[in-house]
Length: 219
Image 1 (cartoon, rainbow, N blue to C red):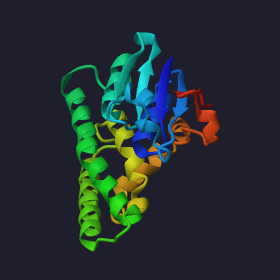
Image 2 (image 1 turned 60 degrees about the vertical axis):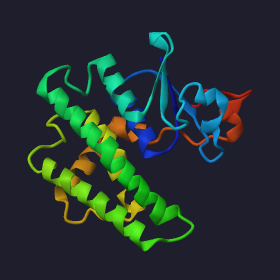
Image 3 (image 1 turned 180 degrees about the vertical axis):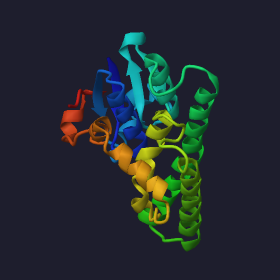
Image 4 (image 1 turned 90 degrees about the vertical axis):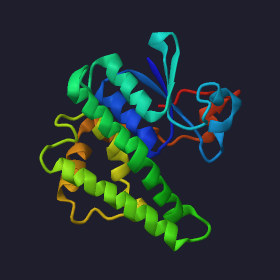
């Protein structure tokens, strides 16, 4: 059994999608980001960075993994699914996973902040992060022009990237003129496991999530 500490963000959805795709048993512990639950001492003992997601693998002596990319690699290696076990294709999957972790995630995340949340609208910052996010989408477009998924077969690289790109409108970034990206999004969105994964965590009342300083099971 995997304990998943998560919230309804692109990084959180990466892991719930992967768990659904791998057909693993897991418990969902919804973290109240607005209430800064991720900064509480009990959670910082699991994830010293105070972010989501985090997993605890109860089948591996309560082993804790944080950082979404590291979690995806751990789960792929644990199950033998969604990433080749060796060779150049394994390296390619990890490369595109790192492309998301180091590029699309941070840059689009800043586009979200400056476009949606910043108390002062700073045109330079909005323009910079939206243009860089669009440029990264164009890299995806080129990669997807000759294959269905990022590294041929569906992998954790696609799972990592999909939840971010599907939120392109929230960052104010268009995917017009990127037919391969649009096709890729539609193909992944249609997968039943993905549809289940993007619904995690379910909305719950705050008092149902935390009791005596510990996360409670949320279904």
